[in-house]
Length: 328
Ligand SMILES: [Zn+2]
Image (tube, rainbow, N blue to C red; front, side, top):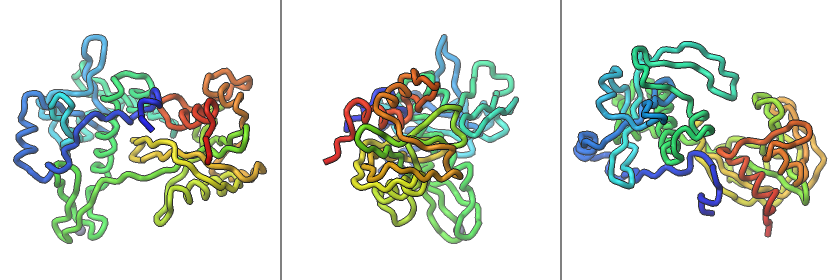
């Protein structure tokens, strides 16, 4: 399914040619880095830095900023833009920024970070950047890729096999252990997110951390040895007590919070009786097609809502409510 059909879905428009086959060529990477048109996406404490530019914000900073901001802990070649300009992701030291306050609530990152002495730079959490359309979709997607990769580097410095400090390799896309020689690769965790449907009704739930009144598609991590279909059926059965038959793939979405791949599916429910897992969910219930449209359009009589356009859950709900899930 072409991504363009899912209007407004976040993080799916990374325009870069990743040049993955060139990452082990250190001379080529150095040549790209030295180019005048090379730009850096800077990440500090999981938050991108944006340069105030007229009335807008530019997340693609000159390479010279890296030294000005205290140097890189890690650099990675993200690729080249369609026009040919190289793009690097850079993890700055934590000391490059200062935390002024933190009112995060487990759903939204509400830390206030600043770069001391640099009023021209702003740190904004990626969810707010994407949800608010603060940069074009292609740039938001590049920020998502960079954030996920740098999140991994920041937390996986030591070898999980022998505990030695590992070294960055392959232009930032691998870490290698100098002691036991083990290679470590950046993680992407597959998560199934699915809408169980039965005739005119779909099953939605509320996690305790969701904003008040928000319902969404059920979701859960795929476990080792599981197919996507099996994970979909297991999660719906465990969380809501509903058995499902056919599972149909819808679309996927990189989700850099911190580094998941959301695999969106529809599942054909075989019963409507619910047995809700109250540890995982505050509530789960069936919604009619009309009610689902009201959630999406923020006109539900009880003030209930669904996720916004940047999230794949929104598109699962919308597709089913307007066109159905088209099983068989
Ligand atoms: Zn090791």
